[in-house]
Image (tube, rainbow, N blue to C red):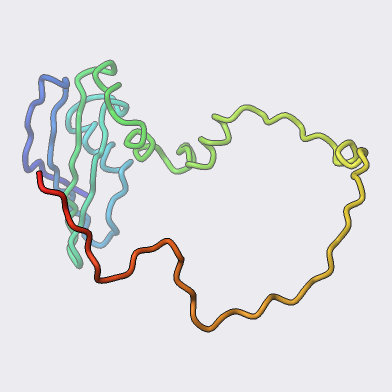
Length: 159
């Protein structure tokens, strides 16, 4: 697997270099983010934790992937990378899924009270009313008595 750098732009404001890399992968599938990170870190001679792959795209039937990579100058400037991007760039066994994040973030819920305590209080006996048949509905709805008849308009006072 070999690659070539198409475009590289320095971004001094964020302390990084933005690069577009084409990875040629004849006879193999599209490379994963970890492989592209390793290739980019070797090329730029930097640590793996300073290289983040933003995207990888391959056209249908092609054996070349276009990768957008960010290479940070130091670990402090790499702190601006979003958590989801950092999570994507980890190996699958180290990633944190949405369900695990929620479980870790929530403190242990207090134990629910036993149902026996709730049922200990006797409820007053309620009389059940017998089901009565519904009254017959009128075929035509009657108009309310306070509404104005349609078609007559009020005379407007002159200003």
